[in-house]
Length: 218
Image 1 (cartoon, rainbow, N blue to C red):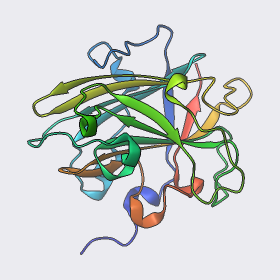
Image 2 (image 1 turned 30 degrees about the horizontal axis):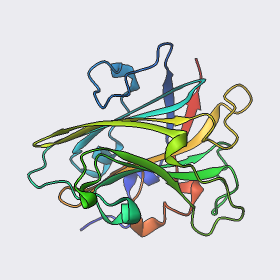
Image 3 (image 1 turned 60 degrees about the vertical axis):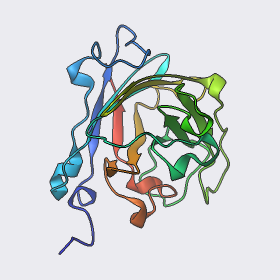
Image 4 (image 1 turned 45 degrees about the horizontal axis):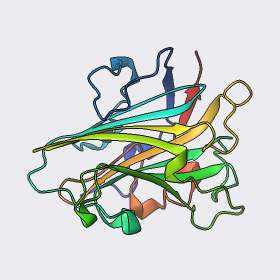
């Protein structure tokens, strides 16, 4: 019988994000990203087998995200106009780590990262921003000009690298606010969902209190 509440939701996750002294490659390859930037696969606490390796780090330029998905047998299905319906990586951020609220503030944002634009027949990756549903205050919505993304497609999956630039992150100030909320979920039509804490049934897309804390320290 499946647990009603995931085990990893019962702990207050706190992740130390690696400070990149040298910018990691953003060309869609993760081979030169430091092992220390790989995040723990917390889904294993709920006896789920991870299908993605997730990396994250930061420096003055912003927050870096890396994802490697393996084990696919089907072609990618991505559509920027309905990014949530296909294969995607979504990132939620809260530059104030307000863990005691259930609705987003102006410091909370949503980003989507797509390894390709298969809906238009393109293999080029796409990154963008979207509103956070039911937010108490609206935050700026990032555009592709605010983000850097690269990807390498493989027969069994893909590698993806991205930079959420400091200009795109509303309230990004590591010296004054080194603790942020950071939620990353990898969604795959074939392999399912892999997240740091919870899935769709517990409203991660609207509730910042469900996002882990990430510490931006040197």
